[in-house]
Image 1 (cartoon, rainbow, N blue to C red):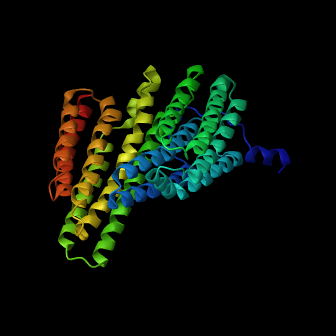
Image 2 (image 1 turned 45 degrees about the vertical axis):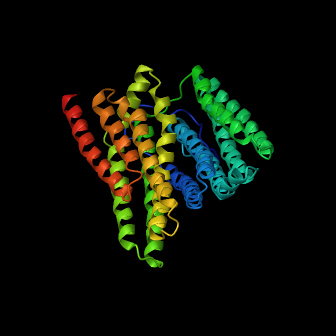
Image 3 (image 1 turned 120 degrees about the vertical axis):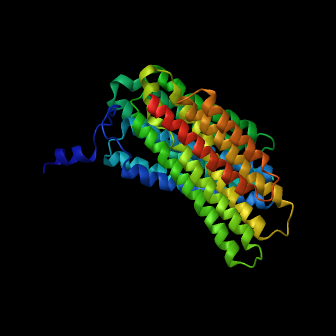
Length: 404
């Protein structure tokens, strides 16, 4: 085989994918990348769990929200870029591996980030370094796309420029994080800047993302996050049953409630086909993809938060010496579940049906879940409420499918 032919296979032009490509599915590289991202998710959930058990609710939740944004935003940008431009050549794979190195570096620094929020001083070094490494890989991908996609050259260059400018902001954030009182406002300002980059870039031309591919990518990541939730809860139960505790019945109750919660959330999320609304948004120019894409931060963060809450709840019922943890750990389950239900309706299900028929069941279920917080078996009540909601939503989805 000639040298030019070999080169053509190793390095190919990064041209836009067909948004109507039949049979488009997630690649093996995307699945591997998701598994690496979920390592960071697990670290963030573990930090939240430890903070809740230690009674440091405010710093734990704040640190978790900050860490999860960095994880989720990098994943989101990678997923939408790959939907539009993935050509699976050597260059693409190497730059994706660079992003994986970044996310693993970020994951290694999440515990120190939680400590920094708690102590109100800078412990953000590894997180910022990992985040910048991830974003450098993406900038290089956008520059490759700009070179080979003349129709969207300005869009690609805007993405590259916007990411670089915001990354300089994150470096400044690290330098200023040692100053008390600046961490939260600077973080919020930079998050706003991150969210503005896609809207600004796509004003010059929309990238060729694939609705069914994006729907699959989001669904797969939701499953992976729920899997992390199951793992964290399982480890907590294992520790409770192998340790010295006389409260195994209570632990079993938390386990049963957790199973009902996790599988009900899975059922509810996949009760409607996300690709339908994404395809309609791309065709009609409604920009619903921004609500769907950005709003999943709340869905994913709440889903992983449920795992941390179940782990903390298991620890509290297995060792009830610290009774002050009862309400805290109960809320650590009910609050993220309620938030997830509301976010699932606003971000996903409302795009299918805006009527009260879906709104009332989800809002009502969220209210009942929150009201169960003071109960000693709140996780069982939460699971039962979600199971009932599954029955209602399944009937509504079937009725809508038969009608249309």
